[in-house]
Length: 121
Image (cartoon, rainbow, N blue to C red; front, top):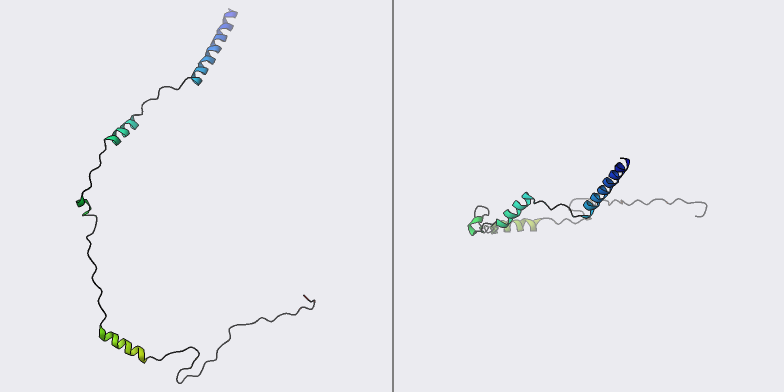
């Protein structure tokens, strides 16, 4: 009986190795059909888009209308504006107007005093 147990164990081990080799080398199981993918592809193949009509855009697009032409300025206002412009006094910077004293120009630039070093640097 002892020999039969050891031989049984050896046969079982060999069988296990043979099965693991077979599953490793043998191709995987036949690919199962994906029902969702099949339905999706079937629907894609049977889809026919509706033809586009010229009347489809009626509710989506506004009708084109040319803008109103701009109003021309009135000639009377132009003459009055030109007259007031010509009567204005010309202001020049740095010159005093009539009855004003000439303002003294301020110097905004400040020079820093240099420090003298005794070491000759």
